[in-house]
Image (cartoon, rainbow, N blue to C red):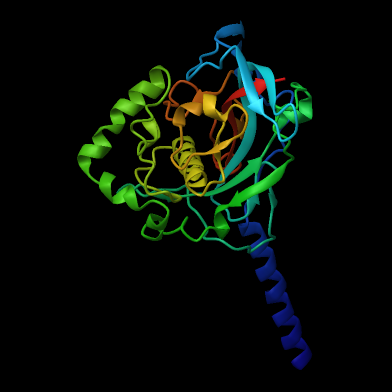
Amino acid sequence: MKALRSLILLGFMCLSQQVHAEAYSCSGRIPNPVTDIAWISIFPIKIGPTTVAGFGQEDVGSSAPAVCACPLPVPPWIRIGIGLSFWEPARAVEVTTTPMCSPILGGIPLGGVGALGKRGSAKTDSESRNSFYHVHWYMFPLTNWMSMLTDTVCVTLESFDLLMLSEFEPTWNDDELATIFSPEATLFANPIAQAACAADCLAASAGFPLNELFWCAGCQGSMYPMTGNIINHESGIQASLLATQRMHSKLHRAFLAWDMNSPAAMCLPLPLPIINKRSYKTQMMYPIPNTLGAHPYGRSDIFWAAGKEYPVMGEDFSYLIWRRRLCCAF
């Protein structure tokens, strides 16, 4: 009888582990740097105010001066160069409802089954329509890997690395705790401030978002609170884009993202605690790559999102972040 009870207990333990492993749903695909990337988004490339190659791609922001100078730590102390501007694929982000799930790495669990983190939800009820997503932020220097730009000043010497896991960010789950990083959120928690976001949505859909409305994430919603709690969930793509913008804003606030798109930052990146939304674009890489081009933050997804989300295997997302660069090329 003791042996029988032991066998039954062992069977239940094996069954429990199998069910737990099956419940941990994680899917993804390692992006192909040739076929999954909208390389046309690197344009326009400008030398000073002159467009060298545009290919019809939209641009915004200050032009680099035609001739620039950067200080050196050794004689001759100053080095003269040429002002260059372009869009650089530099970061990758994955948005998932499963803690520690990595779509970019092929759908593997970063910390094993049952890892840390609050389990999210992409499913909403008919009344509240709320959801929760985790966000993982990667250094993703594609221009280095593809050897597209060989200048040692304009190419940031970075390697693939994991920069942020929301599972280990204690304010990502709690709206009230998130005010530690963004105490100004209380100023915009009113109908008037939120109604102004309609103007940001229109501006982003027609061109680029309005930095003056820094509390808005365009057509995706409000930048506050800077958490993974999504109110008024419309679709997985809308919610994942909003979570991406919130995490990026939080990284700027924590000085983990810097200004690289201003004349003052041509020689060296500068801290920027409030995100410059006009400096970034997103491009979907998973579940279905959108290789037609990248889109500015806050732009409506109505024209490109059809068919990009589907049940079970297509409810987690990964995006490539393009950032505008101004640099002094030697």
